[in-house]
Length: 484
Ligand SMILES: Cc1cc2nc3c(=O)[nH]c(=O)nc-3n(C[C@H](O)[C@H](O)[C@H](O)COP(=O)(O)OP(=O)(O)OC[C@H]3O[C@@H](n4cnc5c(N)ncnc54)[C@H](O)[C@@H]3O)c2cc1C
Image (cartoon, rainbow, N blue to C red; front, side, top):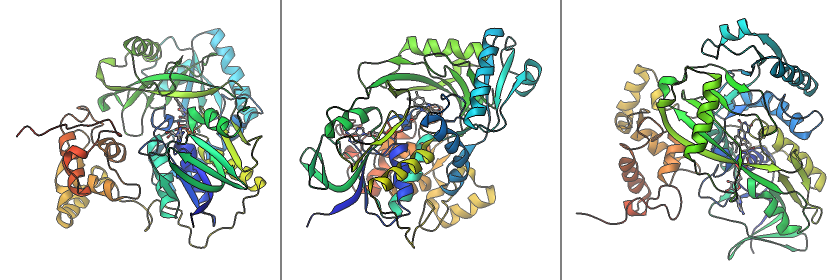
């Protein structure tokens, strides 16, 4: 007889993966259905990576509550799941009286939302903390609890943990139909069907469409708003140490300048509505707009040191809050819609809140005896080769010679690191999957040197022809024929 899952999660972004991770603790059969070929195929792979402190969202909203909770939990969870996180703090910078009035509003709102240790600092203290900030900055809102994290690594870690605890992942599974068969949901993708007693819709910018598959009257409309970014070389990574924001406007939190956990400098995003929900292209005009914004914050930022650009699409709801409620048409179908920023910072709290909803909907939560809270079966992951001491490196190379072969010179990624990424739970199958798991190809040359070697290693390890290795997903062929 066909398997019936207790819960099917639609979408493996940070929301779906975190929900799977938190559900893995319970005696439940869980499946994650993802349209892409990897986790973090949507906004969770392309955002500002900021663990916001929680002063932006309007008081009393679900967003505000879950942001503050998520911000407190993420440092602990990141340690448990071996995800790089840094408590680098944040500053919202004012230029003159009007902006300073806005800082007071944010301070008051933050305090009401329960954000700890918020304060407004004057220009002297601000410039002492961040000497490269514009001399025109007059004050700032200082949030000591804010941080930065690797968003796709967090998503991957949550998914890997769920996987080793028995959760099953289905990739290239683009849900296009949901039928009710008594109390069971038949969740279809083309001619494939997964059956489940409950479902959670975590489909990001497409979650309103998924909600309408079960309830054509679902009222929330998501407006896709693209944000473009530039990533600067690691040589510029120490330009600022905190995340530097402008005073927010109606369009959102505005352009920021921030270090990343991997040591680059991130500049962006702008915010423009796009006609196509998956439009993650970047344009010269957009990059010029974010360059201007970044120069206003940090005039000395060396914007010639850009190594790549990217864009993410926000699922902006017309209700301006997270919507985490059962469908009006089906009491066993939970919608998580409009999970826009701070969806990353809030993700552990969003998952906990969703589980409270699932419990109210009738899901029985019994803790498993054999639950493993870590990312690997044996506990913590091995550090990447580049982070080992010279003695540790020498010992590892002697034991496993694949670690003695550097494949990505920019980021010092070895063949051993790449093989480990392929062999991990939910292991890499494409060049981009290797890149997201190891950083091979994320450095100054952006894969110019290492990509052919990565293709070779993937083909050998997976036992396929190099011609079958894709860049990202089907249609993104790298090699098309032999020349000799
Ligand atoms: C420009 C930008 C900047 C941001 N900055 C921050 C920040 O600094 N801090 C912060 O906290 N938040 C930030 N966010 C918000 C954060 O990125 C999102 O809230 C979060 O990533 C949402 O995760 P998600 O899993 O809900 O959606 P997604 O990551 O989009 O995942 C949804 C998944 O569902 C899959 N899917 C879609 N349709 C289907 C289907 N039919 N069938 C199966 N699967 C499907 C997609 O492939 C995707 O993998 C930012 C967002 C953007 C766009």
